[in-house]
Image 1 (cartoon, rainbow, N blue to C red):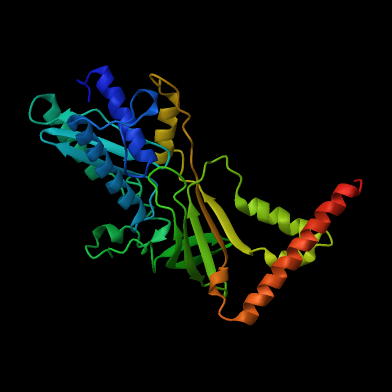
Image 2 (cartoon, rainbow, N blue to C red):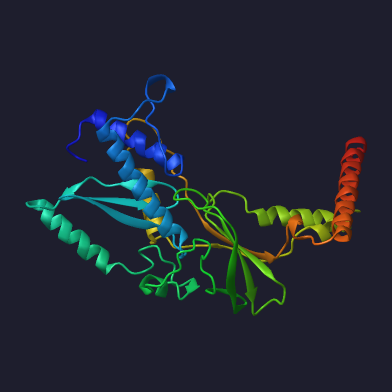
Length: 318
């Protein structure tokens, strides 16, 4: 808040950082790294920060596909905004709306948010069929595993095709970070059962599809063609460009030009990355001894050949 002493601001920032890093729980750490029992006023701020993080986490996880989220915290006659965009959580100064200029600011905030489109609110309506309808749906399932189930992703690769999302295979819920989710899927373009990975990695992170491509090329151009049968087939991969005028990139641009007080912060730009590949199955899905034995034999043979090839390359001059 604008009228808080500097020492209180530092403590509040420290508490919020601890809450974010610990996934919703925090301890106040004193000098030398030893934990101490929080004072009542500090504990109240921890509770508020934890509640805000849980709201943001829910908005990112169930069930919308979105780039960012903004929520407001109302405490008596004060309003504070929290904006999370996968890279950082920004906290605004408090606006007192009980009178004076604060009331006009409060009215302006309400009008501004009312005028925002779904895309400006982070809801990727143009990418996911019916994404915006979930906002209006009062019967959104309470089960957190239902993320975009039965919704469709729309792509254009020469011709338009759709991918229908199914059950969640794995999910890494987070307000800041990659927030990876992997879902079962089917498509009108491929007959195989698919897996779709949606994540928000750092923009300069090398896509895993590049490594798979290099591994396949190495297998095809050497004596290790057998290895290609053990690599997942990637049918389609794309980095979704939200545009320079998008909220995600606008905040990134402003943040990188900001004057950071009391320290440095390297803002990490993120990219929406979607990978469609063939559905693989874990070892625990094996149902009998024969299947298990065959897989273990394949693994053992594969490791032996890999070690031999590695040793051979060390001994053979290029």
